Image (cartoon, rainbow, N blue to C red; front, side, top):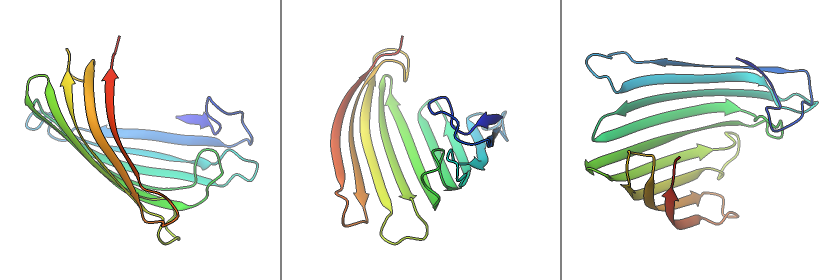
Length: 171
């Protein structure tokens, strides 16, 4: 696709158009139907008159089965849509959901993110663990209890820890 750099939520501040696309492949649909590989890429300029570079490269592998979901993502990029950041950055995320019995699942996620590859002590680690009770169809209406913590290397940032109880209702 070709898009205005400001998106739907901001007015256009330059003439740049952003090119983006996604490719997803299921390499073994008859043998391992739940396995897929995806790539998402984007290149353009941030939405300021200075037009800083904005690039995204995101790879993902996922596996979905009746009893388990596993995903892994890797991100490498530069800048952002608003044009207020021109740093090189990278990170990855790993997610698992285990469904041991009907209507119940256990989740876990780990993220590692570096918002500026040239700076020291700015990375963060995020951990999420939780349990969900699905009221009807899986992932539609559910109650989720999770513990979410973000640990920052930067001594000036306070770590974030929370316990959340969420009711999700999908109509």
